[in-house]
Image (cartoon, rainbow, N blue to C red; front, side, top):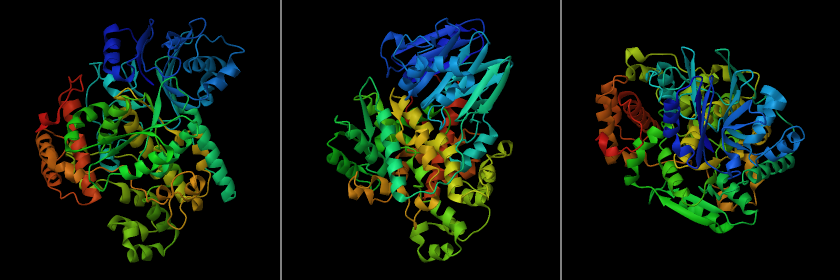
Length: 606
């Protein structure tokens, strides 16, 4: 795991500044490559091949192809076996397989890679720069292009070291953020700074940018037996975990006590080595899952470590906002940030369970969205048994046979269109991210919902949070459920095997039955929730008010109303955290544009 950066001109001071601000992504070494057409920088977190031979930037035999790479290629040994008949290898690193795969397959090289990555290849003969991001978006990659100056990096703050780039809020990104709690699509909250989308290549050649997809999830619905589905799921998951345990440094697993992390720990334990596990709790709060994590840790005899997050933990919030680059209204960043800090004391690689809910339908929101349009009687069920659906929005959806995109927005939107108009000043009015193309009447509705979340919620919230919070502490996170072979297979399983009579993740539960404790298997999904209402009493309400007084993007009266919320409902909590996160981000990155260090304290905002 590493940090990468570069641009299409020579400026040693800028390159040094970009690398310095990314130092935590690669504290084990650094390297640069420069010629008259390109400047490349790399910071190394040594995981595979710890020797100097694995150092980057790395080149081919004659120095005509250069690569900088952030991530892991899990099939690099298999690729090497194919390529070494024609190419000379000088290291045992996965990086070198990328270079020779490009030489052998051209732009199609990226289709041969199995893993997580953000990379840049510089072809000196063709004067061509290629950027690539992994299929699901586990690793971030940003870029900016103006006045024939192209610059890219693993994080936005590195791009902002170029002082010619104006720090300005994107109205479209802000409008979308207030809907989804993140900025979907290829835009970022910074006007003019873009994200390379998951599963895409970017080619910069002759002063022109071409962006093209190299992978997508094809719609298909396999017909097979329950036994075969379970067998194939387990086979793919076992292989994925095995590949992600390849490491030259110590590794462990995050353990929440839920289905997914428990299954990963169970499979890791099959190696015969004692697994290190890490869990987080919230004191006596009913949101704490430590008792379930302990059941799993005891079952598999892990070396278990726990972290208790309390009110004092809030002091890290400004540092978290700085590390995220963009506002992300996900309060679980706090425990993940702190747990990553603890984990780094014991291991350099961690396995985590993200992605299972998006491929096996693990979220409660899928039930009203899917069944509400599938069966008219579900409306009566929702009214008769309100605890199944929980609130007014889901009742509206459950009784509706209307537009699928509108129903989705009704459920997930933090602020509806009327609220956004009140909250945003006139200069910030814009069109948001359009999800309607994701819905096709000819495709199964649940498949479309999962596909939408795989393309938006997963990369822009869960994976962004996962990367930024772990890498803030020089920790590499690996995600077995997001091996693209497993994702493709899971997405081909019919919806009736995922949501089965309101039972979420039905086929997945059957696949792992007998592998994890029954008490864990029968648990209802809790989610990685945090006690926002309790935390708000620790000064966050006043901080929101103070920041809104200095901010010109959001209406001050509406912000005052939000600061006074009781925070009893999930929507009040989401609105409160969304506004607070944006205001703090705006203060750090837009108002205090000279900030270059994450040494921030929450008390500075009181």
